[in-house]
Image (cartoon, rainbow, N blue to C red; front, side, top):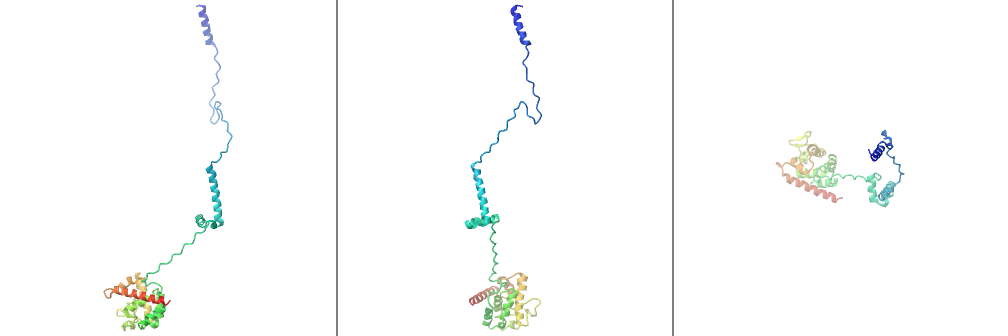
Length: 262
């Protein structure tokens, strides 16, 4: 081996046997919840208050204005400022009482309903009876009073009786039986043949009203002239449509006369 080769070999051995540079020991994994030595812990930045956007400031002003309105409504001052708007708002919030609900007006009975209060005066009752020289004239007050008692307008009693017997003045048995309307009466009424018989005029007047109330109004639920007369005066024995027209015309005439008297 030449000197040059020995020198080259020596240099190589020197490199191989040279000590390695020291290495840092490998860190053990940290326990859960503990910061690692290799991971730097971030420093806590100082908190900074953010400024509210403009729209949030506007909302705060709106809430404040609403509180002021509620206070005004509670004290009643708003009524003088804007009566309609604030009154309605107060009703919604329960601060202002709602106006009372109007009481419904009862429906007016039909013009041809016999089931109603008197539409003529007792003076008109006397005038009608007197016009035909009726034997019922001294009992005009009973005609009116029994009408009120049974809830039947006396004007219809007069109209029915006028058609049947001219208020018992036509010379028929209507005057004898005290039955101006030629009714069959109820089962408890005394009969002479087909028709009811009452011993006196007050009994006969009350009997007609009782028969109309019990049989037609309460029993059959019929209250109008058009619904009652096909049974009261059937077409097999009467001109029922003509009867209806007669009654309604008399009722209209006598109501007009009574109203004219005030």
